[in-house]
Length: 96
Figure 1 (cartoon, helix red, strand yellow):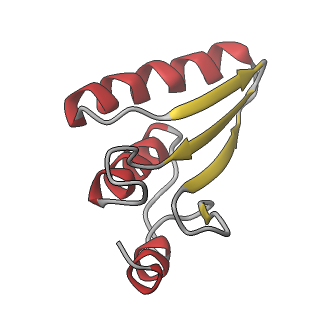
Figure 2 (cartoon, one colour):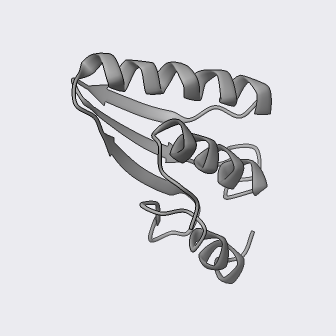
């Protein structure tokens, strides 16, 4: 996916940013506590399995940092944007 298309689609994803190299999306989610963060990760894991597309993520207590990229293509694909939308929904964030 080229930079222009990625930037256009990014407008539909509140809170997400395009990495400087334009090969990944990234976002941090913050929750009230660890239980909510872990519940979010569980919901996202189910969505990722359905898409057969898995995030790079890191969790510390109530924060979950996420990076989405498609390693097979070396950049962004539709799967990254679909999983980002699913993650926003899991966090209770409406689409733009």
